[in-house]
Image (cartoon, rainbow, N blue to C red; front, side, top):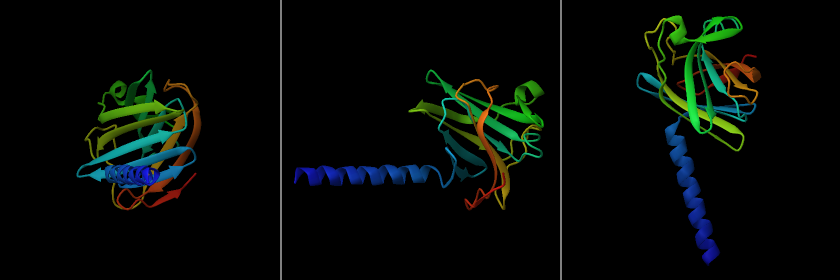
Length: 179
């Protein structure tokens, strides 16, 4: 009898936590060892990135050629402290912080954690920040994103362990792998 009670209680708590998590983000893209969750919230998008790495995780919005032209959000957690930066793909194989280019960081609600070899960051962005280093994020139709995570070092200069390019529809959750 007691086992049944605790099993039922555990199942109820698990169902509650899954439903609460689902309410926080409307869509999920699971690729390789990385998960991307997002929710449109008026004129903003809430994003959560998780990857099996103790290094950085990143998403790039609307890349043109490789990294060039992308609004890149990159983050890491070191000794319990989260660091998330707003970068721009100012060359084919590289990026710089918006502030160094004369822009501003538009990352809001930055948060993160590192646990059991998984780095997770979350943040909110305006769909159109008005900054010349941030392209407006389109929510209707397919939109190109690039995803990546690092080799295990928290330095944003550390190389990729994995990267991929996808077309996603932020409104419907539809996605398609590009490369």
